[in-house]
Length: 348
Image 1: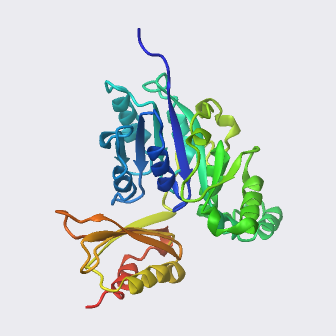
Image 2: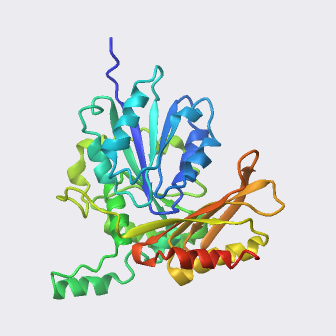
Image 3: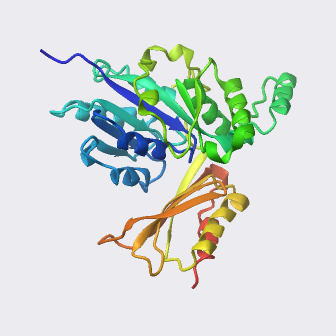
């Protein structure tokens, strides 16, 4: 008899650097008896998150079950990559018990949910839930709506005006599509920051949502997995700025890969990455860097001016290649200026 049980899929969305990969690492390490598969979608040509997750591969989520979709935003490439990948997973002798999808920070979740109705896969998988991660400090600071009252006043004065930034639209679409919102980096925000972030999200959400604090990705997997939302059947309750449009573009954002020689002064390098955020409005920096005299590669994760780094594994036989993916709104991406700013931290 054929197995008619649908495999549950959890879509993990959230803005750049909100902590999606950290959450997935925790879920992989605490899967219990679930056999997992993970699909990772990156914005840019250098995969970082998939490489991080492969270091956590185990018998419950072997390396071959971790698939990178790096040929564009997942919500724009469902036919080219997402559908064939799901079909291949479902055709394996041992299907996964649960699939996790990490979208890029710029992806809109609703077009992805619509793909679950494709004839090739709709009888095989279901959206168990959409989890939106939101960086408490960023949301509490109002970075997605710097002055809501002023924007509303201008709209009332002229219906043709639209003063929402591309970042705010991405953020709002992710919240509107969610079944659960996790406030990441809660330990850095304090009670006042958590309360402010909750207020912003509650104001944006089209319906009442559970909102939970999160630190270092740690949460009971039973809270995140097993929601049973069947979100693909509930699209009307998940409004999007792009409803009614045949497609959407990511021309508002751009990415560039910067290659560097080995660095000698780590503090000077980190300061240079922080200056990029302040001086050139860079949203996200991530990648690996070779540090002179160090046998291990340095993993760099920058969100705005907040930069985290750690030595994650030996270079081994891999070439000691420093490469950073830099993401910003389109008009702020000047490859030569970005390269010059980073090279200034590397002695000639």
